[in-house]
Amino acid sequence: MKRDFLSISDLDRGEINEIIDYGIYLKGNPFSDRTLEKKSIGLVFMKPSTRTRISFEVGIYQMGGQPIYIQGSSTQMSRGEDIEDTARVLSRYLDGLVIRTYAHREVEELAKFSNFPVINALTDLHHPCQVLSDFMTIKEIFGKLEGLKIAYIGDGNNMANSWIVGAPIVGMNISIATPEGYEPNGRVVAEGIKLAELFGTEIEITNDPIEAVKDADIIYTDVWVSMGQENEKDKTKEFYGFQVNRELLSKTGRETIVMHCLPAHKGQEISEDTFEQFADIIFTQAENRLHAQKSLMSFLFK
Ligand code: CP
Ligand code: NVA
Image (cartoon, rainbow, N blue to C red):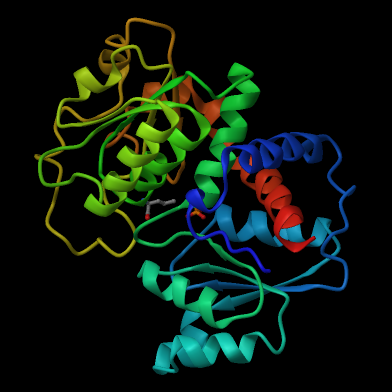
C-alpha cells in the first residue's frame, strides 16, 4: 500500500530514526541512491518557497528522477477544478506529488484520491518535512533525540503544531510558549498530549517564555506572520517578550542551542546577534532539508 507523509505522526519512532540515519549517510554519498530513476515527481506550490522547492528539485535530480515544478496559480485548480479530479488526473502521469498549500484538508483529499505517495511541503496546519530535517540536525549535534528538551517560542503556527506531535514520537520533551490567543491548534495539542502520555515524555503549553525555556537544550522559533496571514493585524505588541535573544537564552540554566526554520525576520522573533551566533546551525537546518527529504523519498518510493 502507498504511504503518504502529511504529518510527522505518519511515521513511527523507528521509521523516523531510520530516515534520519539514512539522511546522514546520503549527506556524504549524494548520488548513491537511485530510487527515483524513471520516476516523475510533481511539485505543486500554492505559496512561495525557497528551501523546500529547491531542495526537493535538487534531491529528485540526485536520485535520478524528474522533478516537475507546478506553480499552483498556473493549474486549473486555481480556476476551481476540484481536488478529487486533479488527483485522479495527476495519478495518470506522475509517480508522486509534493504539495504546499493552505488548507490541510486539501492535502488529505489529494492523498485520498491519488494512487501515489503525497508529501506535505507545508500547510497552514503542519510542516512535517521541516521537523524531520530538524531531527536530523539535532541528532548530528547531540548524537541523540531521546531525553532532550525543546522550547518553541512564538506563534502557535504550523511549525509549533508539527513540533507538538513530533517531539513525543522521538522521545523529546517540549514546551511551547505563545502569547495569549496565539496558542497552537487545539486538536493537534490534544494529539500531542496523547502521544506524550504514550511515550512518557513531557509536554507544556504556556504563555510564559521564561518558564518554557527552563532546562531547554534547544530553543526554536519561527516567524510571527506566516504565509497567508500578511493582511492580518500587526502582532508586534502582543508578541513583546517572545523574541529569542540573549536575555531569553540566559534563562535556560544550561548550554542551549537556537534553531530557526527560516525565513527569519531578524529583530522580530529573533534578535540579529542571536541569529548570527547560531547561524551555522540554522543554515545546517536548511541544508539538511535536502538530505532528509531524499531519505524520506527513498523510504516512500521504494
Ligand atoms: N523552511 C521552509 O520551508 O522554507 P521555504 O518556505 O523557503 O521553503
Ligand atoms: N510558519 C511559516 C513557516 C515557513 C517555513 C509559514 O507558514 O509561513
